[in-house]
Length: 171
Figure 1 (cartoon, rainbow, N blue to C red):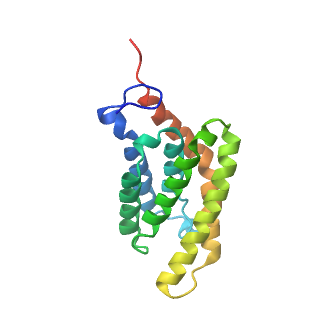
Figure 2: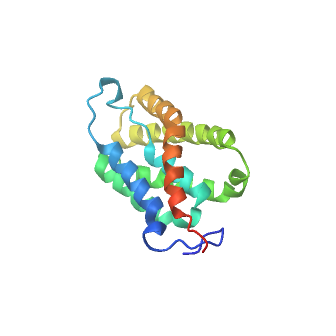
Figure 3: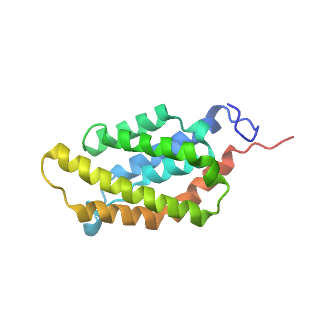
């Protein structure tokens, strides 16, 4: 696969965005013994999809995002298709706006991410409430969004390192 920058991303390097996002999806499913985080673990998959769709959108197509979201739905036991749908909507939004994001600094991308995360959290709360036919705890969804926003710089730092592995040397 040839990237937008003209460099080759074939084989293992080409699936690094998928693998890193999959690792974050699996990390979200681990059982942590932290009382206040039981229902509020950050949306790590959202962070990865947002990041990769800005910097390597050709390596994070809709089909990959859908599969990752569906896997998260299956592993998490939530409404089937909820995360798949919401992550695909985020992917579509970010890819359509990616030229605007690439020209901006980190703080601008973080500000957009804050808005995306708050809408994402609200949407998960609404969909889960409708699906389960009872109002879910709004503050859990809000807390999950706030934790996602707070941890964004740390996750991006790790994803930047993974992205650096994609760049091949010109020799």
